[in-house]
Image (cartoon, rainbow, N blue to C red; front, side):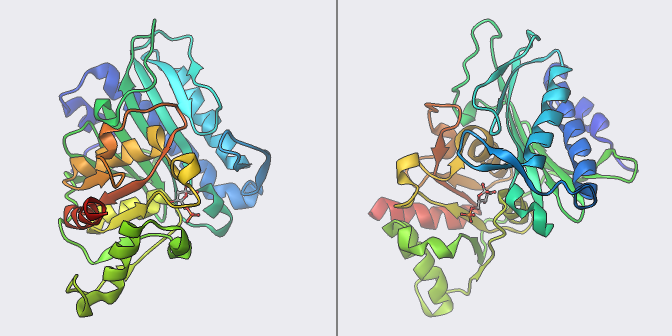
Length: 319
Ligand code: P6P
């Protein structure tokens, strides 16, 4: 007996209006999945010819995905604000809804032309439509989720207590496949772009050096390294089997505050991981406690299995 996303949402102890916002993001993700499946045939994996506020070359599908999200949210009277990685400014909708969505409509899109898993990441916050506060801490999120467009299309959701996984079925509907994910406390797997080692701060250097030493060093166990280069793919692996994801502040990204964005990458992923029993930190504070200063603010991101994140925090505490 399968449980549909609609049945699961109806059973959650949340406002129906909030559930409808999550349902709109799920519908947008299902539509994006359908576009991605055929993109190579449609010749859509290339560049769109312009850059986003991050100064990154926009893929055609970044723009297409953003338009799909905007279409679904504009049609939901409960959403009044959209913040998107692909839009310089927040979109103030006609709707006077009490919810804001912050999203990376297509994270990891540089992987599209090599058919590697990419995703849609989103965060839902409560707002007063007459004077919306766009810069709320991650701890204020009411819901968070991502779609992972991989061999299967997974939708991973939380309302803050518990994280659940849905899979897109043959009819284009999401069905519940894992209710209550638990990130293993311990893990022997870490995810970091090791080509950036020369830029890393000392705590990151020390942590990775200990992992590489494996059973011959202080960690006392063997480690393996995985780095997809697509946050959604790496985080999904960590949620499913444990591990730790690190994109620390380094000497090259320090001027921008980091690589990954707080409102629509770090915060939603931190809520999903913490709701599954994991931990999240910038190295200096819990990600969900960071006070945003801008809608495209970047932060260092370290999150995953509690034991591993605690090891990294110990190196930062000693620094
Ligand atoms: P690097 C994709 O561009 C992204 O924002 C995340 O999805 C991913 O984890 C990271 O950047 C990859 O960064 O420096 O390895 O290319």
